[in-house]
Image (cartoon, rainbow, N blue to C red; front, side, top):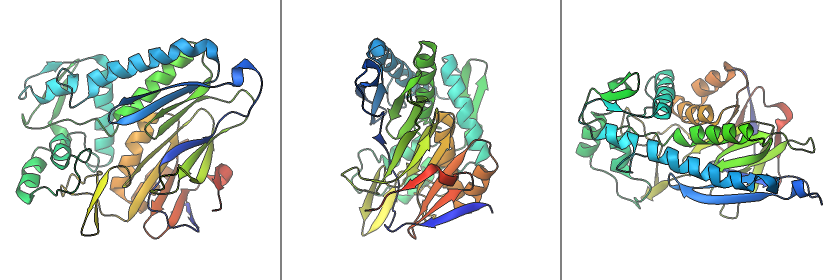
Length: 338
């Protein structure tokens, strides 16, 4: 296999994406950032632009977030996904964007041979990592939830969606943020924005290049470090940096870590010695899909997948304290000393 393996001086448990270097300081109007934050899909999102003339577009981006949450949420009663989940197998007419995202989710479900499965809703609801502080579901309940997980249960016919198993529940949480980030970027580009950052809870999407010609430096935080100190960074231009890791939502019982990345084969969190994966590519929805797919595949097979994809790079952090880089990373990664 072609990939580079680098040892860090700090023991890496996982990776979280943070921005730690923006535009260089200056006195022109263009170099003064404007930003807006909000809470969607159980995470804080932030959009930063570098020209105050585009300030009204920030509100428009958050209107898009409202719209898409109304389509893709598995908890909002009137969303497209909730209507499909509650239809008892009957066909449900949904928005074009919902079909588009479902098809992307099915693509990665097939690519991972079910290791990533968008019909994991009953299982993810059972574990409920957003609120669960340490309760392990009963084995019988896990087995019952597993019986509903199979992406082949989704039937798409033009603009309608039905479920072969009426108890199957779709959950697009692992891929929706990337899709929304891409749609925001498309909207900003169409309205003249050529420089900015969209950060949807760790899905960092850079809009264009910096006006001064520099690359964006996107930091990967020291694992579980509440101060936000970056361990290392990657340099990107008009690309996305997306991660998936055990650090995002988890609890411990008797020193055993239970995290939110669930194995559709066992019903329990994956146990594969990977603590975090970062994907660098063009589209954030693919970064989302690949980060979870690679986690499901494991280090060897996951890295092999990345090596076969054009314009796509990856960073794997494993439990032995090593960082593994895809072969195309080169000098795009910067190590920090602490």
